[in-house]
Length: 276
Ligand code: DGL
Image 1: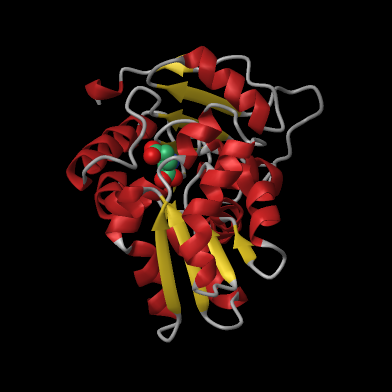
Image 2: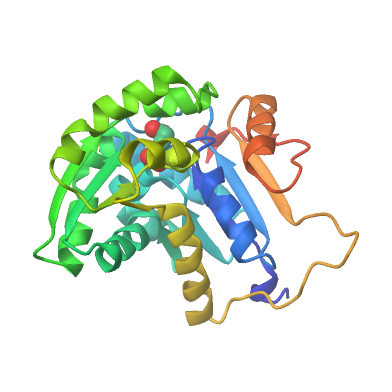
């Protein structure tokens, strides 16, 4: 039987955005293998109901389990916010980490005044999970949350350095900045790709929290706790141990992946996810 330490980590998202989390895992845990699933046929999750997001997430976990994984990373803020319980239940004891808690924890540590802003999809903001996670750690914190639904399509369109995107970011952040936040959580997988724009627009006085990076750090801890870290380095010349699956538009996915990831993605395989 294969040693569990050598098994891959299952990482999933509603589509392309979770690649920002996969990227941080590749950079920070380079010995780990990854099986990534992007639900490109059903994205976005950010405008869907809790019930639907739970059903989709359960199907994805059932698919990931067929790939013999040792841990699951819910690389989607919306799925983490609305479906974590269902995901854990479906995972049947496989360790699971989402992106909300690691981001909230670091925001609490880093914020000097305890005035924290959260930007995310409508579903994530509506669920209130970031605010609850922050208050569980730092009860006196003052949290202002803002849904920014237009930012996901802008990133997917590749309009990262664009006047229109700047104006939309400013319009969304106006109220958040007026509130006097000193820390801002980028609570959606796509927003780290706008990080330098957001940094320029909010100025140096606001600390930006990237849950993707914090999740990779949290994953390392989770693997250690469960004695599941892979200690075998990739040998020179061996292919990168990353496999990609999507529910639609495999070519577009590979193109986007190649613009985000530090490795080449030749292709992604299509999975009929409704069958799981
Ligand atoms: N991955 C989603 C998130 O982090 C953003 C895209 C979507 O709405 O599905 O919330």
